[in-house]
Image (cartoon, rainbow, N blue to C red; front, side, top):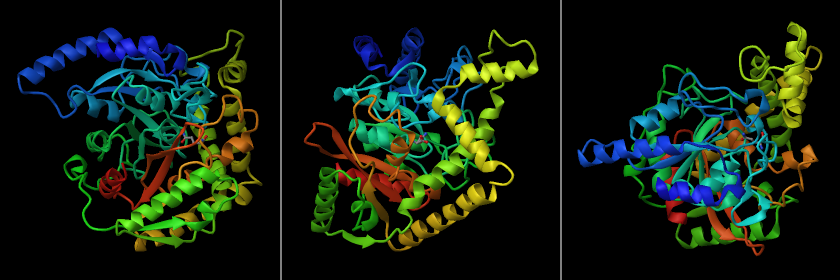
Length: 447
Ligand code: GLN
């Protein structure tokens, strides 16, 4: 813990942490040290973990990197935090992210952007940018992020670490600040597959507090990390041939395909004709859900209330106008629009239908293959400030991550190469529903 605290102190310029639980983590470490000596320690004893600032931890502040939640303290812990603590993990602090996890560059945070430790002029990726950089720069052993449309996988890929988004429903969302409830999943960001497996195993499973948390039994992921036999893998030609894909990333995917074939795995082309529709479908559905989820920030129940509020209406209007940032407001407006009478059928209902087509297509591919291979993002981490002014440019960066999210499928990003610009390239594998075990063990063979 002391080593991590020193490193955190020395790298405050990265802006990964928004709060460090220093004394508490040291105190905790002492208790766990004793438990280890007494032979009573849990599975995660000694693991020092950072949590994204949208994961509730009792009696600790949580803000989703938003002004509207400044000063808000959790009155209960999320199920994931409860389960980590029950296995003696040490939580060292909360990590910067995009406001309400809306973004792909960690530039919408009220605390400012997180810098990529590989190149301080570059973004960390997002929305779990603080989580990815904290692991990249060894500021904690592992971190939790949340992934709605790529927020664990994409920053992990931009920072050269591992990021796993579990199957929708694998991990409880209780105590996670909601962005888009039919998409959100907590996932580990780590340097090793072993750590990702261990964390998933501890966090996953049914939960009385979240009816969407699945009762499918949790496998012993960490004890079965040896992938046996040969895999059948599909790559999506539409993704690999897409226009905006950086040629070096494309070449790196191709090299991996060749390597896998040489190792005896079957790697074949598959078709996904909906690639152009994934980003619009994702943004219609997630903004709709967000507009509903964020209605609760009314200046009364939680966090920030405007000084200028004089009655109920101004309490709502002024608190929300002052408390939410630009990107969050944009999404609330878009989501409210697509749900409004007269537009609902044309946008929201249509997007639900397209979501089903995407799900069916991917599940059909996965009925014949174990995994789908694709890049994580069309580019490596870009320069700070480069894309933040144009939301459409920013949204299009999500083209390879949102399909697994729309389909509720598990997906992982593993670092596979370094670009000539010095930045990491990650490769993404999508697995069958609840097949995190094979996804993890196969990913281990890639490292
Ligand atoms: N970049 C995507 C978005 O802005 C993904 C965010 C996420 O997964 N939380 O919605």
